[in-house]
Length: 108
Image (tube, rainbow, N blue to C red; front, top):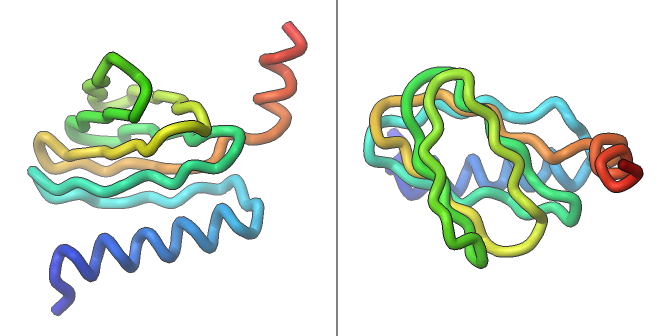
């Protein structure tokens, strides 16, 4: 059985490979209560959606911490390390922000 550390490392490798290929489908991750993991930081940012549960998100350089519940979505900038922690059992989807969304946002 994988330890929590191995499971987090495995997730980091999978998400890193996903982002490296430029895929935008995202990864769905089940998080036991009181577990944390680092989010990838692609240049254009990361989107995290809470499918179930309650998650705390914090990012270097952002003075605010964010508590997200079921159905909430947060887009993090591509700068600074971000960490998510399940305050209670949760499922989250993590994906890079599509380039079209970024260029569309800057065109406004």
